[in-house]
Image (tube, rainbow, N blue to C red):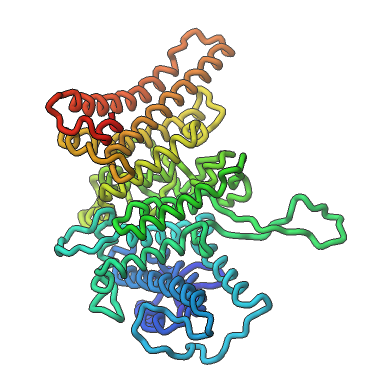
Length: 564
């Protein structure tokens, strides 16, 4: 049945617009009924097809009608059920070695025999080798170098679940961090054990188990590690062709950095979850990932042919980022291997703090040609000629801002891991050999993009007078105002260093060219970078002026001291 919707040879799903509607709806209904009755190994077999289906049912086309939206929602829940069945089934098989059936714990159906009706014969290597092959196939389907649409769609779905919180008050607004269409997709799900998906995951214990399953599914230190990239076999350059032994080959992971950036973004968002088990597990996985290259002096990143078509720009309409597959962060720094694409990661995380509507407005006037790629599905551009119906659909795709605890985790990560750990981030993001020509435009525009988003996010917390009295909380990662002040400080240091580097290169070029007008090009750099620094100074002065009053409460507590 899945073969009616998915081409296994090409690892892509058929376009829903060309599939017969009756075939599509009946196939999805059959998969919804059959998935809870499958064993873990059977669910692993159909997982690549489900991942591809999520990518095919994504974007604004999937929201164009009620029927298409219903199909999109149904496909999303099929993938969530499959992930939960695989992770819970593997946990059960690990804990119980008595040979009992390790089916999914997501349904109340009685144990039954395999739908295949016969025992599967395993090849040499056993079950472990088979599972490794299934994992490699699933990774190739959502590889950012093969099918970035599927990768971004799956990322959006998993981010929705990690940010989801039950709404006990029955509010029509989506939870913080979710979009309207993302919230509707989760709430439309059905359940075998409760009245609906919402009722099943209303208890924090059930929602915790689902989020832990997703973390196990994407964490780089776990077996599945969904977004790590596509693994291929290449010739080992260290072997000679004239050797008597067969040509030696080695496994090479192809990833333009977006897969790693998506993984890190999911872990950072989950590290601010209100449930301690989820936040601690996400923080543990994130810490293990960041420590995995602690003693590595150099890290190789994809370049040249290994990137395939990753360097070809995709000019589809979008606001936050236009170059969907454009690899803009070449570097030999270990931190880049850990973060994937630091600029794209930082922009995506700061957009979660601001909300998509605000973030889009901030970067609207920045050149789209230098925009970093987006981690999630692109939000189409709106203009005066956009129909009202399309405008409402686009607005439903924009996320709300996340809560304060997640904001604190994001501020801390961007400040400490993105800005502090990479002193030359803006230079490395573009062309390391800066000159006065167009080569210097890319790093300058990227610095403006991150700077504008970061200052706007910090200003929302520290720029209002009402936040001064509430800033005096205990100094910890749970204090978003202290963390936002730390981010502002790190940003100003990096912008100042970047300004010095730009001016130094320009002066060297002027000496070589015997150019007398030394301010011809540096005025532009000074104006743009000083504009960002002046906004940061205005926020800092506003906060400090509030603390300067002797009538301000909480001046002596640790939070106030850290913020100042």
